[in-house]
Length: 547
Image (tube, helix red, strand yellow):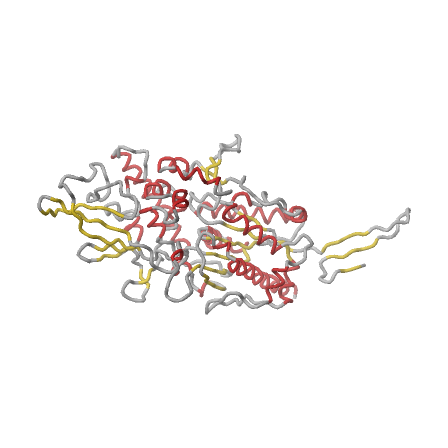
């Protein structure tokens, strides 16, 4: 018998057969399987037209993140088309996205990548990351990758004070990974639906994945979850509300808006702040963003929750109020004063309410009053019955074996422009004169703030009427949304991204943008080290169970 050095396989020579020839038999040591499941962020999953039961499932693609070309049609999509196409009740996950080819050994052991969900997430966002991570975790010869074996070197990042796990390993500790197989999965979800629904689908996905290996005679009990942004909210609901803890060894969160993001508010008020191309793809103004978000619980659950805190404008304290309205006479008022759901999200009597009623339904071109009221009631129910309860159920709850990284500027006092983030939202105003007292009048059927004048203002400005006049010219107030000025990743502010160190194992921050956070080599190494740290605990528990 010739046994290899790591005791993972052995080669036996058989007794010569009648023809005098001797055959070799290769026996591999049974490895425990620990599936790793990746959950993308909002807009990170491919969607298609929802297929009817028993009919052709090959329906039209709606949101396909294969490449820039596959998304080009959204450049010309207005609010009406977005409301129709991006309807959570008429869409579902599309598994036909681009994937990379897998080595034969990987397919033989784990199944095809498409069967493991890789085609359900955007290739242009996550394709290279998935390929890289799987190559780190599995080599065709079943030896450890050079990346894994290099983890005994010094950390390329600094863990924050209070981290329980140190993420440093000896060579022998890394060798423990040879006792396990790590098939990488991806679970796309309908990001338009409530994250509660997505969490229930994650429960089914985890059970099915574990069952797949058990049916093949493998040892497989739990999984590891890796999440990007909103995917972290899905994972939290699964582990902390649906009882998923017992089937999850650990969770690795990247740039999670743990208590929400004020950018979810600003984007519904002025559109996406990205460059021209991406803004036109994702939603360039309030009309395009509201038409989708007002009917989509998932994006609405990204709004700041009751837990959200922002740095006070006059002190270093963090306070619940994150929305400030300053009048022309420099008097300011900040909200929420009670809670964000009543004060900001469903307060249609104020122009600064996150959802402007006339933008909910762009198909209602004549602002029919009954239709507007019906649409508002539907939106209000989403906030009261789906968004708020979701926030409350996951508030302060995290899997105890959670590892977190988030994005902030680290160098000096100057924040890089692409990392400037809305932690607080501030509308600043001034008086302006109108050329005619009768130039503008509030819309007759508008059920929002009656002082709102120009409903065609869809970006960072809003004009309100006053009762003041001067020389037969009316005086109006123009409110302008101030630019983001806080530290973060461009979307999630520091206060929401960092997550309480007392509730998790390790936390690390780097200057990384929100969307491409998983393309960063430091982020990738943090993830890999977190996986190895989780495996140390798994191995230790297994050894204790044997004694």
